[in-house]
Length: 141
Image (spheres, rainbow, N blue to C red):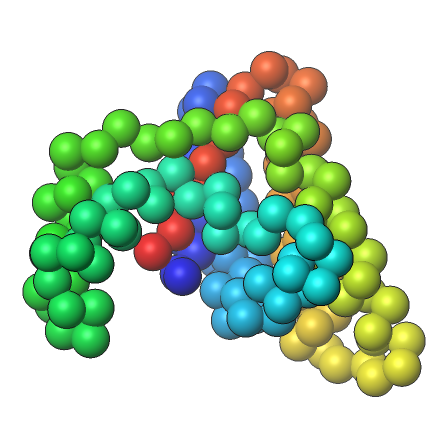
């Protein structure tokens, strides 16, 4: 999964810094592990174009990056994104953030602190979208 950002139905801005989505990408494994341990929805499940990824995986070898990206882009062009209600994600992201934050007490880590900050920014974006009645999807690959 590669996080390009968040897309809001009403066209408002998502992440203002490239670093926040980068940390979500770098720690995708940790985020998925935490979600599994807490039995919550993982961030990657809010990918608006997961169908395009599935089609690309069927049509090309995921290990052949160029062929896979071509197949993904073709599939993405033919798919409508799946939109999500912010309330579907906020609780899960807050729970993941809290769990990760607790681990920092025992083992401080600057990168993990930045991941927590990235999750906080994402929660703020989603809370604002919820107030406006705007749906969202994560732009992932």
